Image (cartoon, rainbow, N blue to C red; front, side, top):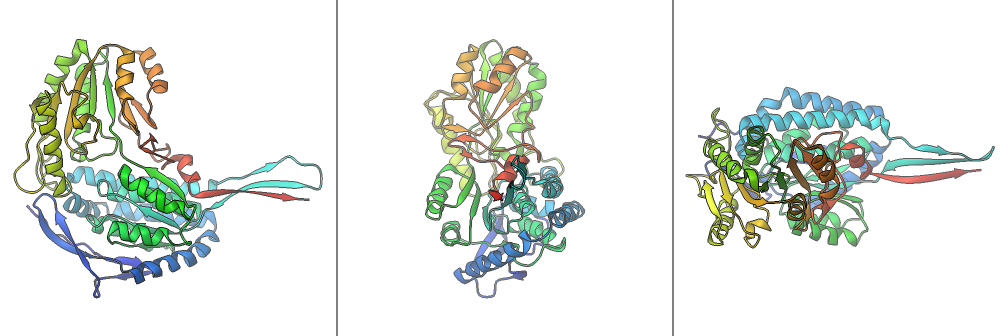
Length: 477
């Protein structure tokens, strides 16, 4: 199945939309069929130079724009996103593969995030320090400057909305580099901002070979802040590039989220929560629950119930009403997932559900592995796909040790009815976010970010706004 793909695939630089015009083109592929459905133009070095110059000039205009006016633009853009949610969601499904209901929810969550940022723009407060009569000392917060924003393909609208929303609320201009795999839906997001009245030069949208674009942008003194969501190796690479210019960075990198299932949990309710969450977006979620550590007393019942539910997950094209899980996002992913599953099986893991590639496109079956040993590659390498791995634990301390054994610390989850367990887990687990009896950890008003190799800095909440502001002390006598 392939619905009509009607996307405006363009660059947006200095207030104008740019099409092919002799530029290199990158094929856009429907992951459910593996067929090309469009081509997006790739920015040339001259395009990037123009984008940088426009962002430099746009910053001077935008930082001088009153905060309530900046907020009004963001809130109007949020309204346009809601009005256009259905066509943007269809573009998202065709480009990325997720079920249309998930795509629709992503677009609406993006609108909510922009609206929250619009409300917060006038609330960037400073403070006045106590001084003797005739003297005054002020602490002010000012926008850091032009931002280079890099977002991935798994949540292309929402993750770019987070970067744009907070940067624009703070008064920064942005050169946005979304993924080439999903250009139509991210372009539609930028168009909402433009149609809401964003001045020319405040946001640029560029596509291109990621390494070439990042090197070009980060070599420029115009860029003062880098915001990146993606893999650990690429994040470290960008940090090295940013170091030469002492550019501030926010890094939301990979995870390998542990889920601790205690024997005192409501087992059926827990299974009903964890299985849909595991296979949301085909497991291509940076905080996807992956390493399920289950207390011995309920381990067998848990894996049996999980396997039964996993086998019932309907896969297919994201535009079909019956689909509960779509394909993986690109041709590389099914082979990478298969290699991890095969390695785990060879080392003693039991495949209780799935374990194979699907037919056509980039599909992989919803998969459950049981009794997975620590030396299996999948126990140390995030699968970023529809695979849940399980192993038993005995005591509270055993569970925490297993949860903290990796160098990643983005998100972690636990299910327990014990108040003491819940209280201790919040402190004991090494992660930037901990969800206890819930997966709802990504909201506009809460910080989202990790520790250890999962990065640093936050997106969301007042903490996320801080990343786009510098502190200045002004002393007067």
